[in-house]
Length: 172
Length: 426
Image (tube, rainbow over all chains, first blue to last red; front, side, top):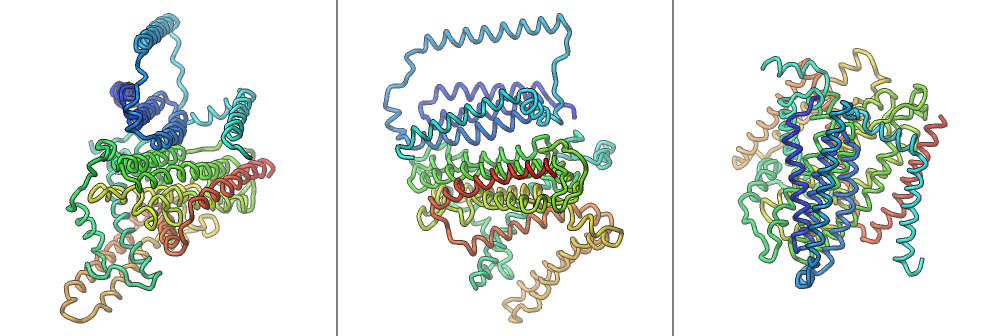
């Protein structure tokens, strides 16, 4: 089907992602920050859906919002909130942060302008994956074209898991 | 306008794929109403069935055989004072039940009640359902933390550990079933279709794959499909926090677990979410392993006669229920005190009989069949949920973790690998 109200949903989701991101760094309560981060991640999943990448959106929800953030919350909830609120906040480097943010923003604007110019120049159509077979296409790439790199990455993760277990347990 | 309405009915696809917003909206409203009725019915059935298992009568006072008890409960919850603990985190306390209800209902967007009876069909159907239902753990954690009280916090911690661990076993079982959609191997009950094909995650295509391969996946590559189904059936009880895995709300240790501090309407939202989540995971199990909307024996018992016999099942069910209600009416005490209740039960029997007769009409009969078989299978799972609660004692937390990580996870991995090997070899 043809997309409905694309600009509206794009600005809505981007706005939510930005709002969540700002709340993450401005909330003093760590649990509120984590919840704001979940809002950002879900808005990003929505943006992936708009980019005809349903598989990435689904994985984003399952892994980040449903898995990793739950573990985050699990740890944060065990920390005494009152005590951590009385301690010094690490916001002394706001000048450095501001410079970094401006530099990164300038880079993004530059890339956007340049790619738009290139696109107008060459007149190439935007690449668009068919939504109906998105998962199958990803599978073909992961397990066909980039099989070796994919397996090496999974082996790396396995090593990291074993390392974590070894460091966490005194006696195995 | 009329053309727009009828164009979907002729399109032979789901409203979402046809791009028909009006029908998508109608389906959403219908599913919402159906779910609410199902939750009300489950409330009554659970209390009645549990009572009969324990040789009690269950609710008998409000209405004949306690039929109006869920309505009385709902009214009680709505007019009850809504208490928020003074030291609670107000915003999080407020969002938690809303979030958990939204996640429970959103999953139903992709549930296929029939080849065309779903709000939409997504390329990532199963993944979407698992993902959105895994978000419900956030609601539990938020509720437990925001209450700022010990029992809810412990309940929330238990819940998050339990749900994250069982999600893995659940995911492995689902992957085994998704793998089967691409493998046309003969197995024990399948038919050879040629080489390995494309798999699919879409809920409707998974059921269609079972139709094409002439085998529900529970019977495919016997006993691999059965084991995968068993893993899912255990994990889904842990995911929905139901007995015997209801540690997050173990009343003997944690009062009511993560929703101890909730009352009135907010508590009823948790109740609603729990039951709709149960229905949601049951529909995943039905879609992946029990052939979704397919009727029993679609390939063995074919022909006009059998089609007619199976299409009469929905009407027969409602007429049987009407008969039971009628027998109940006749057995009511003859004392004048029970006159209103007797009349009410007779009216209920009449309504059921009327629905049964309505389902006998050929056009209704043909359209309702898919929905009927799907709902019947889901209802079977709902009965199992009550049965487990009536029979199994609650697990201890370390036992629960051991079952999840040391039994279900390795078995799930083994089934996945064996399914792949068997599928490629056969």
